Image 1 (cartoon, rainbow, N blue to C red):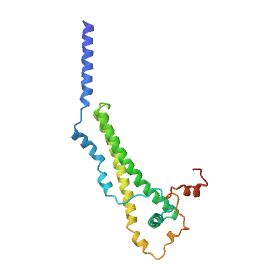
Image 2 (cartoon, helix red, strand yellow):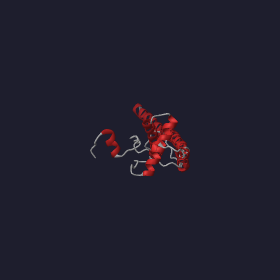
Image 3 (tube, rainbow, N blue to C red):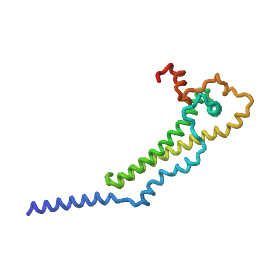
Image 4 (tube, one colour):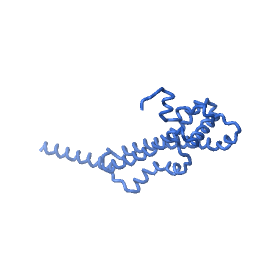
Length: 200
């Protein structure tokens, strides 16, 4: 009799624990899913309004592209009171930050969707666990969104000064003998100039 009572108590305890665990996991409706993912789309509208296209792998034989990047470097040099080489590194960092944070925004949104799919498949311990993961990703998303906006605004500030720069009578920054800093150029030729004869 005593053993039967102990077994009954154990079974009831297990049932209560299971019910408690199940109570933490609730299937999310479509509207709840959309609400949880909404914070990961707030940068989308901003991204669609961007008018600047980054220069990827500067083509040293494209005269218009080379001229434009020289102008960007010169404007950066003036605004940052930097040397020509340092200005090239700064501008390259702006472009890299603009692009890299764009990739991060996409990645954080994808990871948020993955967390929701895991929760829907009952592969996460609880709703609290889901909320914590989504909040962590949201914080990272917001940080990347701000960083991309800052880089974009700084580049657009340079854009606004292009016309006045081009109106100047003397343009030493366009002198072909003035080497474009290698952080801006990712070509093999530039790597060889900087680091010696590299193997392909």
